[in-house]
Amino acid sequence: MRRNLSTSLKRRRASPMALYDRLPRDLRQWLAHAALPWSAQSALKLWQRALREARGDVQAALAALSRAEARLITRDAAQVWGAHHPAALSPATAPEAPR
Image 1 (cartoon, helix red, strand yellow):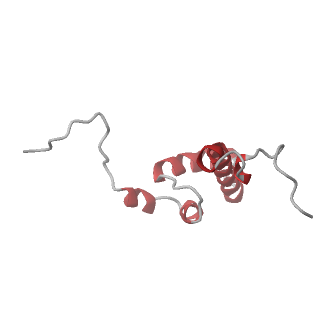
Image 2 (cartoon, rainbow, N blue to C red; image 1 turned 180 degrees about the vertical axis):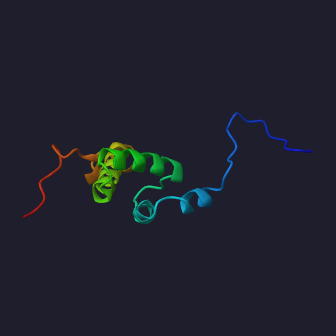
Image 3 (cartoon, rainbow, N blue to C red; image 1 turned 90 degrees about the horizontal axis):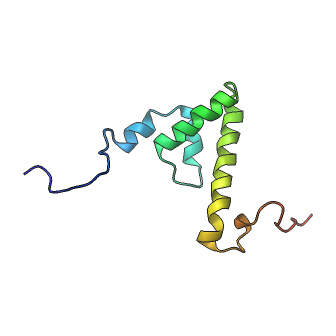
């Protein structure tokens, strides 16, 4: 018997770790410290776009990845942690940091 499973989901052709291992070194280092659990596929897609927009500047591309991650955290923070969590507040409504 082959598989007793009926699904419309696509089957993985490669292991997630193999995909991760093939990522560029700078992207792998960024992912190692990322706050969100990025898939290798989505991280690579965002990395390629950021690198293209930064005209090959790796540091600018890494900064773009960090900004994208911060936007995602801000978007989801209110739902996950509540509306009063500091990450859920937009920069315009966030309380001023002590000086």
